[in-house]
Image (cartoon, rainbow, N blue to C red; front, side, top):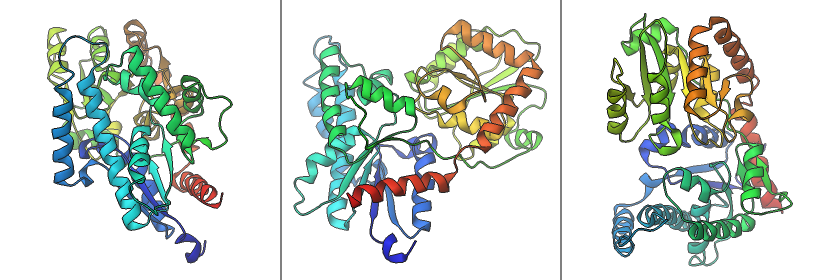
Length: 401
């Protein structure tokens, strides 16, 4: 690729993540793409909420408080304060993206959220002469309004309908739409009543993660873990969609000879989960932690468990396969498409989860088979170079057309 060709596009990735979100969220999959694009001589940047100035953040919070004060009276089917907060933070990122696109000459703005895209599209009209091409990646399974609802932002029927119409118009106006699985793309089109599937919509998986590798004994030594205890690991921010209470209840029903320790890697308020574990008679408090080295925990754990109610992809699930950690995942969203036979799939119910965990902890042969299949699948997974090739092809195709 010549230098002249590489300089012909300039890409801005935009998310609504906070700094803590990036530890377990999109940053783990997007930053390697940005870095690979830069290696190719392509100008690429990635912004999130930490890039907002103090003034912009101040006005976002102030406006949210003002608007929320008009919606707190009476019971409604929609959680308007939470919805307004989500809309404002995403529109604020769209505003910043439009400003930077006009000021710094970005040719492509990649919005990792349709509401950010709607905000970008709105504010772009105030920057005359800016001709940035824009597109969207949907990171929820199915339409984004449904994903927000499942993630704890309660939406009533009428508000859900309006949000879906808004999302539909935004996606149809985008130059590209990406989802991390084929099933996810299909579900979005179904939810938004879009048929046939537009040619500019693409399933594009996250690249195979690169983890720091450890011997199990070494990893446990570094973490200060007991060599004789069974460690169960789950990963994800503390949010309703991750169903950590379900996981805790399932752990309380396990019948295994060795004592176990539940470890949850994720930001958020862990107090209610710790209290639930105490009520259910856990012998040990749950270990809650945050880390920049997820591989250390995966190599140290005996069993990785994801109890999510919905996942568009589930990057932590794929990381478990890469690490060779025996994995149990709920068969939701795009998870079966990602893990295949490399994890023991189960229904997202208490009895099913207990049965799956019991089987994996007591059947050594089953664990070994699952681990072998998982590692085989992980080794065949597309790497960052292959995935960046596909991103670059999309960017150049829309620019040419």
